[in-house]
Image (cartoon, rainbow, N blue to C red; front, side):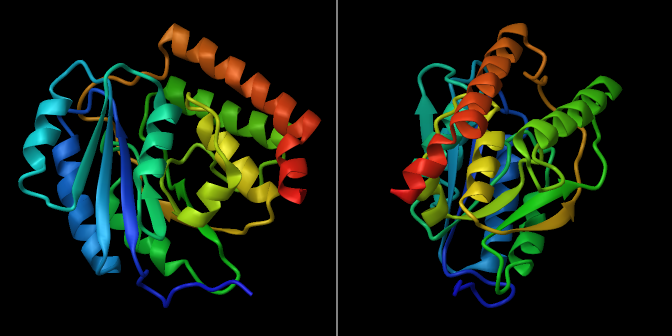
Length: 249
């Protein structure tokens, strides 16, 4: 039988933010997360992974540490990729539950309460899905195509695998053993969690246009790396099913 927290509260929680050139938004994300975390738990921390930013993200984060004692900052000396930053954040987190979203303010950490409220018997993790996508038309089209592609080829059951607004028990993240270093980590994560038999609840969340910085999504070398990772994931998770054999041992 699954053991879930009382409605509206969790025993302890880590908020994890990967950040890359998010100097204009990361301070507001940290301050808003601090408010949100106090609403759902008495024991919390904020973990921000600065993934080799070339702007003033590092300076802002180091200054924020004196104001927010719950803030822990990890600096990657070079840009290692979105997946690598997330994995560092997950490995650094110490609390029972992990909430994560991006450091660019396209999601509102105050909506964490919606995720926590969705925890009840039979639910292992909570996934947000975008009410509407406030991006360029090209990104909206690519996002829909990507979702349909992974749904068909990977058998993903949740409605928005590309929504980086999730609440997960740390024990599941320790169990599934993530490998991706690119944005493909979200697909890998959801696929492995679903294949392990865990159940997602889904809640609608708002998605906002980017106010600072530029998206790294259409950088050619990142697209090539992500496509290679997707092909590798398909081979491992769908064809070879290595993770399922490992779980059964």
